[in-house]
Length: 151
Length: 151
Length: 151
Length: 151
Image (tube, rainbow over all chains, first blue to last red):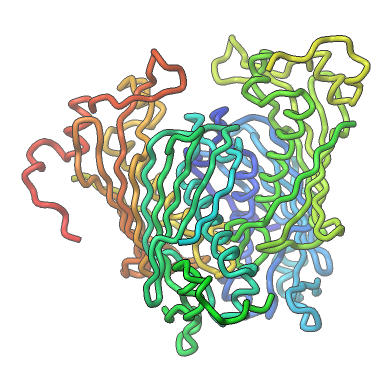
């Protein structure tokens, strides 16, 4: 499946009085990596995607993270994000954040493809992924037979 | 002019590796105090105000802050916010954040009353403050005969 | 086991362009609730606890959250936090965030009681929970003969 | 005087329900730009600088920002940061954030070079800038005669 790797400099404002990253900040970094991966995989920016596919977002419905070692102000961490599963109206992602090659944080997300519910202003409801989106997230049909990425 | 005072517990996640509040967090606290003051002064919640007065927000166009002494995790700071001036389409606010009675941070904001520009999607343009809003911000509410805004 | 319930007003700055809470903000709210619960359970503020128990923090090593329904700017949500398990050097917490009685977000955390590693500056290592702390987290405080921690 | 220019992609989590950057986020971006400029000007990372110059930080004591036009999720903004003045124990910075060449936000900061006060744990006190630091911030002595950067 498709993946995206980027390097992030840990900022002073990301860190807490213990001198390490305040952990909700990792979750925000993973959120941005997910958007960058989706944009790269579908070949357009998020606001263009909204128009192309007539949908209203891909909110997280379940997330999990394991924090194995701390990272600190000034560290250049590497975040690798990949699709980990594609369902009818949902998809999964995995994030691996490493520092000098060592795994520091692992993240897992399940997101749902949603549209606004015309009958209930302010409500969102799941909608099946467009076929093209599902195929691209899955790395084109052929890739579906490949084993899970090693962990 | 009207004012609002609230106590805020400084959170672990508000602080940086020096153990003191990361200063953009103060600006976010002031933003929330401004909304609470406006809601109290006009007698309704922000999303209700949008409907009552048919406007689209009051973004900051100028802000300034002076940081006189640091505050830390666990401190209970007091934020006092007041209107400091009312113009045709803009208004000013002042914030005083104290710790045990000593001034720690002072903030100043100028905000503009805006509506969406129908001719330019995504653009906002200034609009004169409704008379009732201007009067209440200026603290002359008592002199007014107009009814309460619907809630 | 002990629990703590608090009401949190969702702020404008907590929300994203979809008008709903940007989900890492929930994780930050849960972090603060955990500290408030620990402070209440042990009868002292976090920085005092550091001295009383000669430890250096309780970082999260594993967290999970489920997002069942969105909450929005101006909502008053209720967060109930409780201990969900106490081990030798770790403990678990559960958070339930509700809006008008309906469950909106559920959170689960595992934290480790740590001290600085004198042999490796900047490193933290797990240390068994003090007996008194473990008992109080487990809700057996009443059975204890030990005096209150100094405040 | 020395300057640093970087491009920042506006993230979903930087934006508020109006779809524009929540303005305290700009202040955090400026803070990171300041650190990058100082690191580049002095040729070392912040934590190394702490050791080289035996100081404890450069907190902001005064900041101001003007918000001229909004920026939005997905925008690639350019932030140019430069020293704007060097005093005995303090220095000033200017930030210009542009979108497609148009000025969107201007920021101004005064920072103080501080050390921990050994007589008062937890207190910081101003200390004169080391001569080498002052010269580099000022762009080497000769540059001191040059006029203010055009605005």
